[in-house]
Length: 107
Image: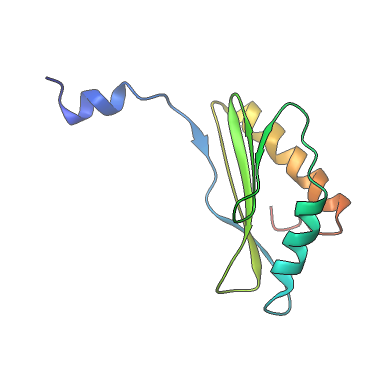
């Protein structure tokens, strides 16, 4: 039998971001923005899930954007096996968001 510490030490390490919010002026604008993003999803080599937002899964990490139900913002999270991969996924998201007229100054 393993201790809890031993079980957790066997899990792979990953790097992740805190919740990142992109704010909008009016409640509901986040849903309009998410609809536009969902129509223009193109991440080569990734598995894309479009339930409650857009999640983009790569072999070594993922990115997620979803609309907040309570505040006028899009919520983003990222996770990867290492810092380089995390930054690469974030750059792809920044490009995608920018191409859809969504400001990325918040991250």
